[in-house]
Length: 496
Ligand code: GLN
Image (tube, rainbow, N blue to C red; front, side, top):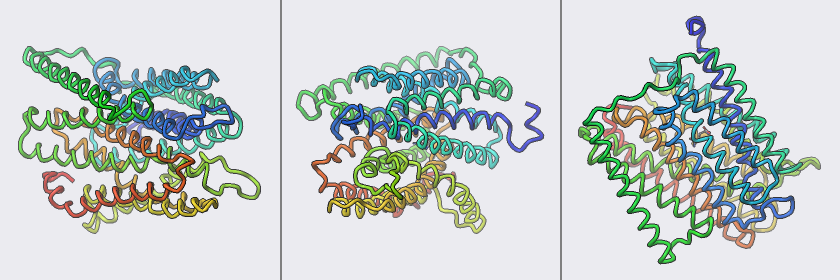
């Protein structure tokens, strides 16, 4: 670790940067063509209806973020972060290889499940080693996370460009194969780089010694957990039997998953509030975390439509032939990563500048802004959809501006969100609550999938109204947060 002293950032950061860049290459690359493949009827895709395809997309992306919970736990308690990243990467690559096989539906779903499991194992742990490299925290750690976020988006742009092109212009399975190659490159970087530059970080955890009191406590928590599972099973059975949700369809399964995610998160928050032995200040902070959870879930449910309704809009209703050349519709998803690469440094300097003037907006205000921006983006989409319903192709500018506004929203919420979760969480619950932050993303992805179910070709005229609903909901919640930002900030108890 001696080389770190003479350098601004330890070399280990760049190992993690490139490993995550390739992992995100495979994740966003595959994700860009996933729904297109599920809906395609003529190029060897699955030929599903939008409602079914989008629900599968939602279930898949929601599982990815939900599986970060067991992934984080396994690293903390069994493998250590480094091994979890290595195994996770191998599992992801295998998943993409399975997707690259032009087999039937069952093989394809197996591939998706394998990629989701691998990502759950890799994703949370690679970020925790970034944090571990800077035990002192502070500005250097924040800078490291910004650099790391660049790696994420560089990977996403490269992945969507290459996987999107191969998948849409040549063959779907070749696209999925390219994702596997990307992950292989990530594994090679990680293998060589981590042996050299990440010694002593993310190692196998020592066996935990459990005191008798801890064992009793764990026992009663386990019983509570079983109780909750039993309750959920009964509740879902009632929903199924009363035909409220039909879990034999993909859409019904996604709705069922939504019920599970909402109930478990609610009980988790209630549990730590009631039985977590918290002081009043800590309880108020958990209250703030609940507000941020809701805001983040609503934000992602709009934002993550990048892969669902906005992708359908790009494919079917957007002008994308330029000078005789037709751009692959998945490339529109590149606007997010590209705008991040442009705006992230600008926004970071803006916050620093505003801080120096003493007017840096507080976290609840930034969250509110993010929600208003996501809603504003959908207002632009509503205008675009109004053009599309007339039978004309909409200008690519609609999607371009929407992505730009959504990306600025992401920069208001995503980087501050995780860090405020770690700061506001009562000490004993930090890693669990970090997991809950990803659960908000999971829920958002699920809703983004369910929502796009309305985008069937037959329902074209409903499109402006659907986009309008997202605008009203996001801006409504954003304004509410903007009105109440002061009490929320007060409940944060001195933490900004
Ligand atoms: N785009 C970021 C990433 O892939 C954040 C995604 C999220 O937290 N939902 O890491």
